[in-house]
Length: 575
Image (tube, rainbow, N blue to C red; front, side):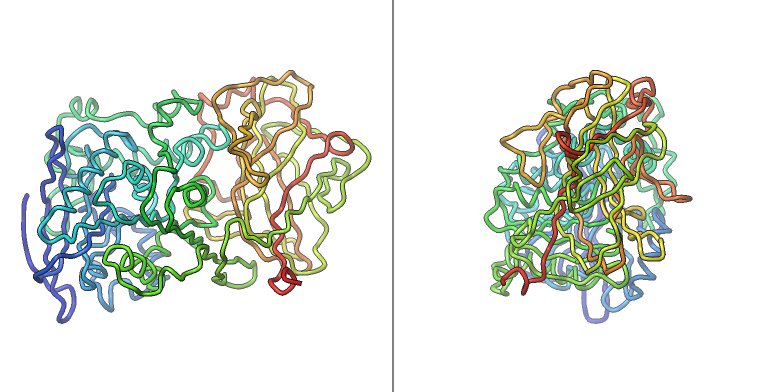
């Protein structure tokens, strides 16, 4: 349905809403978009997003639990400038953007919602569609020719992908919590197949929104019609989509299929504001940090926050930051953004809300890279390396081992990336290492943070030991780079040294708190709280290979350690 209507978004503010606007692709497929624009003469900058979650599917209808959490966190979400009528999952609220002179466009990706075609998540064809849509928007009579991209998760991943194609009308991007590397951030953490998210996500959030799905329960609140268009026969529907989980499982190495979905970040030249979440291990953190570090953009900023991704994106302070960035690069407003610190972090604390802090570099320039040494005798973590060699053993599929520090005598901050150097072996020809950094209060209670998608510990990292090879040219002392392009099996009982990337963190620990490094051969889950980002796919974890007995060696000749980003106070660092 093509519809054009005018409505009042709030008192004295009018907005024009063009529904199901056709955007023709070069191959003849026509995508459908909702276009929200000022009801006024002139040319305006465009804020665009494209994804597979349904441009006509109301946030509350599809994600009621998250909607209720968001309303509790932000009671004014549907007041003071917005009715909430057009809120969609992970998409900006047009009622908060159009009154400030922006055009807001939401597009159903090929094969989803009202857009026909073959549904293939994160595919090069989908990315090319996005580039063509950007050029369409840049040439419209109501556009000033500059397009900015904004959105969370899937909509952020697509930003990294399309920005590397360099469509001429693209002027700036704000990828909010979304991976920039299909293999390392999404499908295979440390080379281990991530089954829990992709397998559950595909039917629950992708297939339910496939174009032509007659089983979709969602209805457009404006029209009462199904948000996926007229129903297609089941056999046609099945033949009109890829099988994303199976595709991932068929590509266990970082091969051409994976690389087609991982952009060359050096090709990204537009200004960018990359927003990650400390509580997003497994999806919503690493890609934002790596995207910021490796993008070729001259004008780039990194912001890392805490909490859930669906609350931070809509909170007024963050929306104001998004608008200020786009005002600078979509309409050349001299608003002081250029002087903003390049790195803006929420520093977490176990006993009080996080505090925003401005920095100039990532990793922080004043970082004191400090080793916490593992000692197999007593499974300790300490500042001093043990002299005597020792070995400790654990069942690979059991709870693993906890290496603990003594309670800290003074307050300590750790902010930045982490690395574990481990000497390991197994009774089998391969092993998976799940490294979880945890914190405990003096009373023994574990520190648990609200995360992007689940409760989280301090930090997580993963590595399949047969993927232990590193690329020396791309590795940093604080972040090893594994090419994941081959397997090197273990010789049972023969120790090897591995460098394991642990995703970045930020935490201030008061006196009396201690850190624990849990090493296991399976996912860490809090008691009574099943995890979402799991690695238990039946084809990727053969127990005859990954269910042996693993060993960790420490001491002289086989030093195992955890490299920590210790941050001194600014006055101490300058002394």
